[in-house]
Image 1 (cartoon, rainbow, N blue to C red):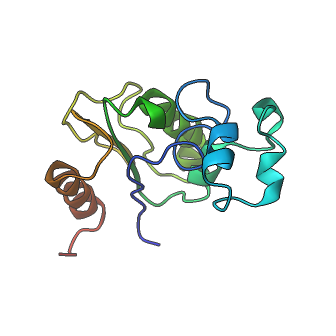
Image 2: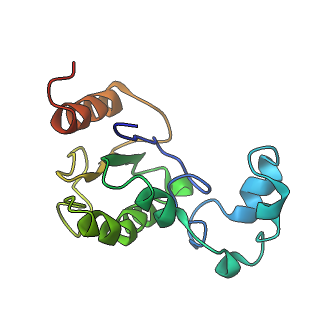
Length: 148
């Protein structure tokens, strides 16, 4: 893996499973029971007992670049929680000599953050748009020089 760019992934993706905003573990297991094994369902009402959260999965990617993306109206995917996941994974990146986040705060709308752990949030709702693709490409060009 050269880099990872999950787009607007909520619970079980890039949003914290222990989060209190957006899609919950119980909701995702009820709506999409085939996405996770039965062990995850044991935490439907006890997310505080989860042995790890999404920041651990990001840390497993270190020191490779990871870009989280979202839209400001996609509160179901918990944009603020996603950024907190990146912040929580940053220690592993720094331990391995990678930059991590470029800033401790979320970037402004439509602006790609400048770090090995990147974040991009745009106006709008849950979807994938040409603006998202422009952010993916800019992130990839920065972190994979010489690739087209």
